Amino acid sequence: MVWVVDTSVVLDLVVASSPWRTASLACLQQHLPDGLCVCPVTFVEVGPAFGGNAQAAEAFFQIVPISTSEPWISADTELAHRLWNDHQVRRKAVQIPKRPVADVLIAAFASRFQGIITRNAADFRNIAPTLTIVEP
Image: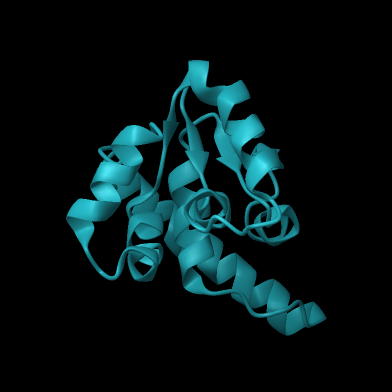
């Protein structure tokens, strides 16, 4: 079953000077037999790394190879709706740090796959405690 690759790990591949590049590449190679994809939100988040050129980003993902064709479905929206509410309730109750809504959307998307490969494990654990997380 496919693994969702988080924006942090994709950027490790794009930014040649990333100190996490080697670890991220090794982790992705290990999970490649299961399949790799990105959430549509990640595709948007990496846009600046490609100068806003979607064709250049798509070409990169084909070379890596990480699929960009997994669709966002209504179940992702429904889960994201609940996760965002739960996060806001916890944040107000115990003052956990703010997280961008993009992480909630990515967590909801990843929940219907094998899990997520990310360097931001603590953030995703706060958002979706049952999500399977792999760290490079």
